[in-house]
Length: 345
Image (cartoon, rainbow, N blue to C red):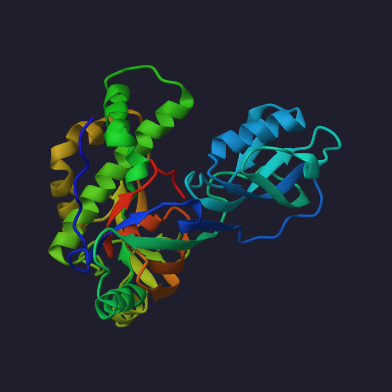
């Protein structure tokens, strides 16, 4: 295991040191599905509020209660354990189930709807966060914090993968190297290893773009992403700068695999140079025939609001799926996690 790099920040040094997750209510996440339950079908779609509970553990408890295999329970994304989170689960209906009598510590069933399909990972649209940053020592200057948050609201932040993707002490990177060296693994461990390798390579590319000051600009050969969508394309035109300023489009970087780097010209040169120190990971992904993909280098922080008092800087914002709240927080404060590692949101 090894310490992860302190990847470059876009908006300057952190303003203060802060604790998060001192108590569950300091970190609240609400999953936004982005679609309505179908109203019929063979699955129950459950809206669940959980406190200090792991998503996978809740899924297993739901399966036992419904009398079905764990594989017949679906959820759109992992949610933080040391938090209060609201998320959706689908449970294949094996018979009449009285969900109001479901009993698990820290878990409350809020809504039940018939639904036609199992929830798949990434099916949700966004996550809404309410987070308290509690200063470790002196409270920061409200004016300075206010200026930084206005900058983030206007220009977004680098779309880094959060540290939780890499496991405690970067253990998932070691897992990836073991996989690429030929170690046989179960499907879930293999997926974790591959995801960690791609995340490290992407963060390395993004770190180079942030350090060079062009993470939010289009360089020659870049592919761009249409904000809030999976659409990726080559973009040019007179209004390119305007669309970037309005956060309508974002430059992208490669999620490594066969065909990477996906851009051309200057963008390709930057990426190829950035990953030179991790060619074992690049070659391992290609050998496993993992297809390259694109991920935005920048993320928009939607509906950002804040309140600053003597005890905490309190934030509210929304992020699209696959984006990490920790990528926002690291542009504000040097964060000390009060309780363990969190899961991906």
